[in-house]
Image (tube, rainbow, N blue to C red):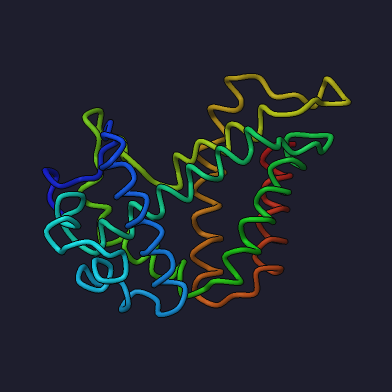
Length: 205
């Protein structure tokens, strides 16, 4: 993917937004059942009940379709944290609770997450934003910061400052990326989650 075809956040009309949502839902359904090879432009168009040119109005390739789906799932995670903040006593415990939920879900749908991250890796070279930072990636997952800020901390000394959260979030995000790829590759989600939880506790201690 060239820099001219990178995924960008854009404002869509209601009709185009509805079509995008339908395409993303179709991508996810097809990938759950058949993985990466099941998510072709023509297959997605047929399953979504739209024309192939309509799909190309939204994306330039199947990898970009998968990347859009990964972005959408990340947005859902952020919305879920905002709607139902974890109530654990410390920032580390709250984040581990969210990590556990997402890794468990990935373990239930390995073909989906194999496809999503394969699309992400294939598209990564075209994701540089104007400031040189990645335009999208699990390393910038908004829900990590949301989780660290959410809830109340029984021990005020355990609370994190905004500066600490900004410093820790990229490291936590990259650790999470590795954990998700590990689970998508077939590692036991419980084993991976245990390692990630210990690393999170150490980093936020």
